[in-house]
Amino acid sequence: MASLPPLSAAAASLLRHHVCFRHPTSSRSCFANSESYGCCGGVPDAGRYARLRLRWRGPVRAKVGEVEKDQGADLGLRADQPKSLRRRLRLRPRLRVLRWRLLRLLSPRELAGDAAAALRRAIRRVPPPAVASVVLGALLLAARLTLPKNPAQEVAYADLLAGLRAGAVTAVAFEEDSRRIYFSKAEDVGSGEDEHETGRGAAVPKWPYYARRVPHDEGFLLGLMREGGVDYRSAPRPAGRLLVDMLTTLLTLWLSLLPMMWFLQRQMSSGGSADKRRRPRKQQVGFDDVQGVDEAKEELVEIVSCLRGSLNYKKLGARLPRGVLLAGPPGTGKTLLAKAVAGEAGIPFFSVSASEFVEMFVGRGAARVRELFKEAKEAAPSIIFIDELDAVGGSRGRSFNDERDQTLNQLLTEMDGFDSDVKVIVMAATNRPKALDSALCRPGRFSRKVFVGVPDLEGRRKILAVHLRKVPLEEESEIICDLVANVTPGLVGADLANIVNEAALLAARRGKLKSSYIIRYIRLRWN
Ligand SMILES: Nc1ncnc2c1ncn2[C@@H]1O[C@H](COP(=O)(O)OP(=O)(O)OP(=O)(O)O)[C@@H](O)[C@H]1O
Image (cartoon, rainbow, N blue to C red; front, side, top):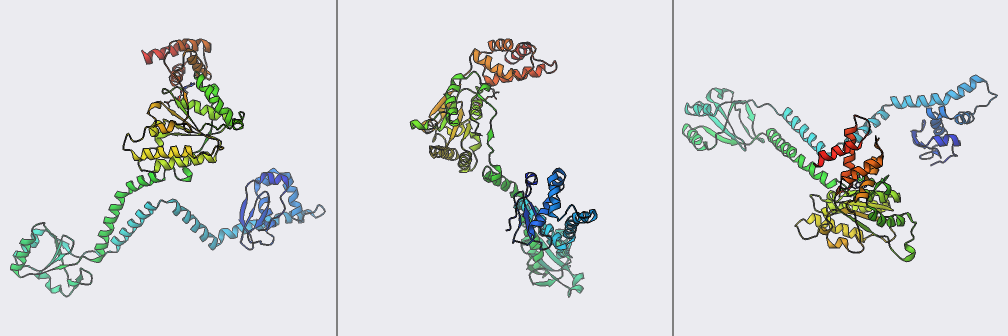
């Protein structure tokens, strides 16, 4: 592949994307980008065409004066040349590109190639079960349309019996694997030479009528035919009708199975495919946003220092804690604390609820755990946060849930499998720390437990202050915080955040929030 000198700095700074195009004369694929331009297979003069292609991109030319200047030199323009010649020289590459584009647009080969590529792309996007359904439907339609129309006329079973009793019926044929009984009458015997194919190669007289068999009446019918000396036989079904029936059964079965197959496929593929990869988030939350849990924060500050590298724990031969378990009543800010750790350390945060691991199929939950840890290791240093850990981390062997046990085993294995220098911390939250499996809490796994408790008066005041930060207030924030904190003993951060939000909604029509709205909401809600 030929590599030519770079474009001028100004052009290069604008041409970030590379351009692929076809060489005008050799129709080979060429490429060009801000660093180089060249051609697959080393087509001579590729660089020139590449430059032309790049230069004639409207936005670049319009924006950069230098490109215009350079362009003249590239095209062999000189200041001493007459104006008309210079104009022609400038126009020539443009016309050439235009001609090449027109040729490409009109060439049937190119058109066919484009259409085939578009079709291939479209087919690739359609799910295979849908393709199979369409193919089956099309086959059934084709078979129905090409099947010759049955010349026999349907009559009532009673007419057949009446004909037999009256001696009008001369011949009867029982169609195999079907309920049709074909017969002919004495008046039709004249046209008997005219034969009708009812089976694979077996030729029988043409049957002008047929009746549907009545269950459990065969004995009586046979008796009548024997008495009347009627010629009766059995005939195979026509191949065409056999095919149509087979396709109908197949399509009916297939369509009824489709929802189940779709569900199974969703279950099998969820979490595993690359496009469903979990995206880590950089957290904007900091320790300032979490208040009233000072003890918990103090314990976590140390981990943040290790992650940031401001605490050299390795010097003393220490290892980064692998797991941190945040335990406490609901709504006390465990999730918020974990986010704050990631936010303070400025590292990716992988958040997952343990219930997402609980799958219907054995092994899927374990695969999801594996995937999550793999992604976190690739993004290290990072934090994995597992909310409601008790959903998978409850004591093993208490239930017959194999899938849950396997998921937990995988979690234990992954936590053991960290190299000491991989900076991935697993944080988990639970409201029921006692229900956890003892293997999870042993040193080396969730050895560090941080209790996040219900905030006291001062804590409630601070939490309210955090949530009132962005709310326009009619009174001093401190007055509102004091008042509300005093009347909300036992409430946790989530309750206080909710109170502020509801009161703000109450105040929305009046523009600003007053303590009286908050008190009114508290009375409404708790009295
Ligand atoms: N200590 C706190 N400081 C500030 N806001 C808080 C605090 N605790 C809770 N909140 C508010 O409550 C919301 C819910 O809190 P969070 O999800 O962290 O609670 P949790 O302890 O994880 O609850 P659960 O155990 O039910 O998952 C937060 O988004 C935040 O707005």
